[in-house]
Image (tube, rainbow over the protein chains, first blue to last red):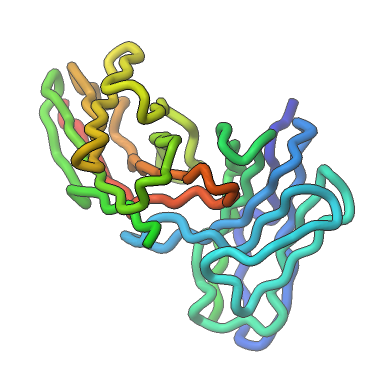
Length: 112
Length: 113
């Protein structure tokens, strides 16, 4: 099993550009999550999903959108990139919400 | 409030020493407390976890101590090694059905050889 994979690993965006961060898991997990990590600030939940077709906002959803059309994929969309979205983004998945979350390797995003 | 407060922000320990990281939570409904370990350039990975019905859990050199009345829990790393150098996050999640794991801000541990 590859676990949780994320693409791209690194990306530079100009202000106002859009992009999609890809996340795929092959563990047949129901729950998937997107976090952002900023230095000294821990992990902030952006969006999460409890199954295909169901998504909900986390702590910091503004400026982001998600969709969950399949169990495996949970892409994160940035529509109008802003410097405040410079961060490292992690996707994670778990079988149930109170069980271990498995994280991907992260996507480092720089918005200039 | 669902905060998890973690301290210290950074910690430097000599090889063979004991590393101690502390966390405090506010929501008494929390019923699962995991610790995640993150190496530079990698995603976090579960290290050890505890539920509030036990006061201590040990896995190898890693021990979680849990004080339910004080709403505090801590990670102890015995005989710390340079390979333990990483960022450690404590977290909590409550039994009310929320799917949201609440993380502390992390502790960067450096173990000097």
